[in-house]
Image 1 (cartoon, rainbow, N blue to C red):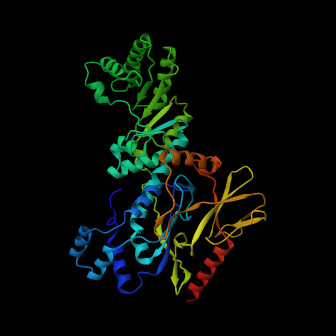
Image 2: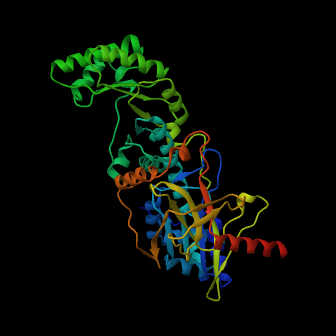
Length: 474
């Protein structure tokens, strides 16, 4: 991965310099990355940790970087000398890629000298926000498709990196393949694609184009049938070519629809293919599809086996930003950790103090029932009943008697040394699929999902309450 050290906001550097000037540079601090609830983001699928690890491992200031910063006339030579020897020496814990997470839960925590922890905020948010957003969109799309989904979004992505890593995140969310060849090469995942309308238009006739394509790709012949007239020309011409292939002992793959009324056209095309003796020919559909259109297509009985989805997946239409934040939660003073908490008139913007982790609570069948955010040093005895309560509407509570708990966070860096190594993208995608199966579909359904419980431990709740009272008194 290239050096992204200057992929940061200027104010991170001015604060770093100010910490150095005021003698606070080496003060140990803890920051949390989390996202807040918003419409269409009742949950999310974690993604981007591998790239976050690469970023941390490559952090360093080159002489060209220092020369540029000197040209800004904001910093002194002491700061530049510090940057020449900069190295991340802190510790990081994070939730694995592929886990389903909820608003307010720490996705990643950084424990490091204040000057280091401040620098990494912007890039970590950039990496985790984007991939988590696209992985979440992908999960929703794949869940509604009830069919295989190919990621086709590169040409509509908001830049090369968004195309590469958006496709990576889409695989984590459930897509079976991507059209992005560079992503396939980088992460060893399946490539997919057919042909464009321009292929058909470059031949004298549609039939000529289909025949030429079948000759060149006899084992992967999936024909785009909507260049002229889908039902009067495209599908009949595809069937003619399929007949010719079958006479040669070849098996055609199917057809693709890219426009029009996909529900109607797919049902009519299915009839035509079946009557012609091609019940195994797949029907692929593409064309500005999202999870809501997929839901509608299924309600109408569309006969679509595979989807190619681009724009609305890679840009996460409806929800173009995750909105993840990076907040200070503890600071070391005289060798003692002091919890920190941001207050606000907006309840959703009040943060949870202390160094934390998140536990997932399961019932006897292994289904996820609730999450519990706790202080990191807390332990729980699962042989005893556990009562949790809503952190705001405290009269709402649930008691578990037969249950198990799993800490969602893993140690990633310890004192600047990487101790967690990312699985392959295929392994992450398989893990994500397994994690989705832990949840009842009521929690992840498209419309009006059931509220999943995310509560605070008694110890964390009491700490937050005490700090709130202290702030109000002061």
